[in-house]
Structure formats: structure tokens, C-alpha cells
Length: 321
Image (tube, rainbow, N blue to C red):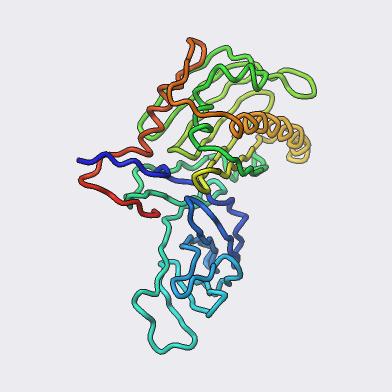
């Protein structure tokens, strides 16, 4: 057996929100150091393919058109189906056998589009669960934001175990903190008091779960019941796209609850931006000097390592998926 360490982690990663790709629309993407393209056919299904055309390298996401359930290259109008097969060349009698785009395994759930990445070419070994309240008339839809951050994804992951940073960075008093790992999942349970920017205190209880290395859902019961989505996906070795969303339970009526969203997001964005400022300017210490109040950071690192380091039958060469 050979121990293989990959450049990017294995798992499901969000590449866009669902409404970023309407029916008949395309979206140019750059993740895992590669160009991708998402498109939604007339059947409503989102597909993700390699972005550069197999023909002469034009970018399908930069001017490509959706035709039925295919995407047409902006350069020579070759059409590719969701299976990656070239199904039409307008000026050719025969389609070359190698006229194919690589297909990225794609899933759409909870208002986001995810692709599965595995540099060793393996199949998914976990799934992304459906949020039962998503789409319910009792809940508002996601209020969303996105950041591109110059950091390594491991910095973001460690927040879930870093108990010590909550009072110092986020003005949050932690009364109870538990961290557990289970296969591809990492769970955090917290009870505490958060100081609200603009005044007030929110007594809350939350359950936060990472499903794999890049998709987090938090359910919080406090002044407002809500779900929070945090999904971070490596663009390349030096930057990450982080998407966040908040879904509030309707209190009274939707219009009244919508009035709370702006202030709620202002507070959340300020908290994220406090973290981002630190992530973008810190040094990653392989062997940090930890104290008894820091939280189970070492345990979180061991858990996260599984998505990079695996035992393989022989020497493996990285693939894009």
C-alpha cells in the first residue's frame, strides 16, 4: 500500500447557488485549479463539465449557449451533452471519438449546486442531507453572501473546534461546548450568549455539522430560529470561495421576519470578516502551542486529514476529479 496525499481534499463542494444558473443559463467556474462550466438545460437539470472545449480550448463558460439539454461552444458551435459527449458538429460528417468533455458528478440540494472532487478518481462515500425545512412556507429562503479569501481551507475548518476564539473574536460567551467526529462528519454543540452589534444579548443553542471537508450546516435556536450554511471550495492552492446563507423561521408573517434579515446578516458578515482578516494574515503552525482552553483543535486536524491522505494500492497520480 502507498500513502497518497492529494493537493485538494476529497468530497462534495458547493460551486454555486441554484439561482446562479437559471434554465438556459451557464456559469463559468474556477475550482481545484481548473476551469469548469455549469449549465441548466430545458429539463431543469444542472450539469457541470470541464470548461475548456476538447476541440481547440475555447472556454464554454465564456459565451457558450444552452441548446436544449446541451451546451454549445462559442468558437465552432460544437455541442456537448450532459454526459460530456459531443453530439453535434455543424460542419462535420463524423464526430471524433475523443470529442468529449469530462463530466463532474453533480448534485443539487438545499438551494446549492455541488460537485464531487476526488483527485484519485474515487466515487463518493457520503451524501449531503436534505434540510427538511428548506422550501417550507414556515421559513424564508436563503439570504446569501460570498467571499473569495486568500487562505487554505484548513484555516476555516479549524474554527469549528477553536473554542478559545469565540469570546475574543466574536464577543460570544461560551457556556457549554462539545466537539465530536463521526466518519465524514464533525459536530459542534454550543450554548452561549452572543453580544449583538448594535446592542442586546442573544442567548442561543446551536448544532453545527460539517458534512465532509467543505459543507457546513448550523441550526441555531436563539432570538430567531435559523439555519446557517457555510460552504467553502478551493479555487486554487492559495484561495477559497466561501459562500454563506441564512434561513430564518418566519415569526408572525414573512414581511415582519424579512425586516430582521438585514440586521441579522450585518452581524453575521461582520463576524465572518473578523475571521477573514485573521485567516488572510496568519501563519499556519503545524505544531501550535496549545493550552487547555483552546478546544479540540488537534482532534479536528486529525479528522480533516482523512480527506487528503489515503492508502492506495500503488503509486497514484492526481486526476482532476
